[in-house]
Image (cartoon, rainbow, N blue to C red; front, side, top):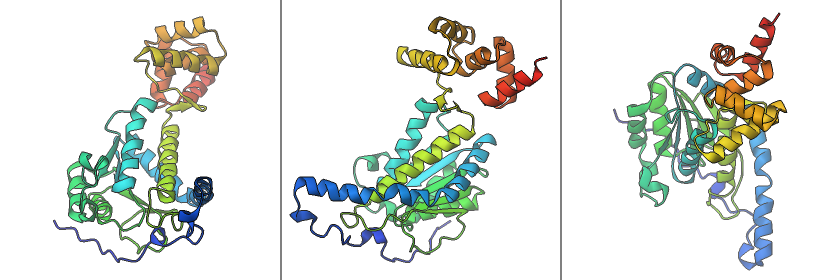
Length: 308
């Protein structure tokens, strides 16, 4: 199957010259940094404007993962590298299975460090990669500053054909609408300090979007209790120390009490937490967590409601 996205080559705002930085090459080092920083200041506000759309993406991703499906990131250049970074960090941070979040980068591994010519212009390559890995029920998030990168658009259209839910993060409000996108997240970051250097404001916006998206998804899936990372598995001395600190922070109990509960729960921080906060045994804490899909608060509510 040949994928040919209908891409109209309209100049993206990120490619235009920024009137605030036309004299950047005449400035002192301090002034160069100041003007770049002044441009960066507006990025969080631009992201704030798309939070309703981002919430829809989070809810779709959460539904996919709860249903036994996966989340895919698709990007090229800076967008792809940021996507790879975000997916890689979720495994150690939240102890998620390594195949929950899958990053697809135009040009593959080699393109993470070296530019691969024409990789992002190949719509069929994006479609082919998704064709091999996406299933109906998955969630696919594409990222492209221009809103029209063929590799990304081809991948999203193929994912939609296969029954996935799709979303696109773009920094170009003037990009032509892409057929079949379920959620469009357009962060208007405007012209870059250096024209066309989308690793700057556009890249910062995409990093903020990705971090918020994946973190909110983890919270919705019960991988935290309050603002604590309670899905950590203590596989080394540093992490064992972290789990004890988390337990002490959450319960207010002594290091000895927390260490004992963690040992009784075979290192499962969530089980130890429910055990200590609800005052029940390991077996009851485990049962409550299984019934609540791993949500600590829901497990605690169930245990407390069941007590006479």
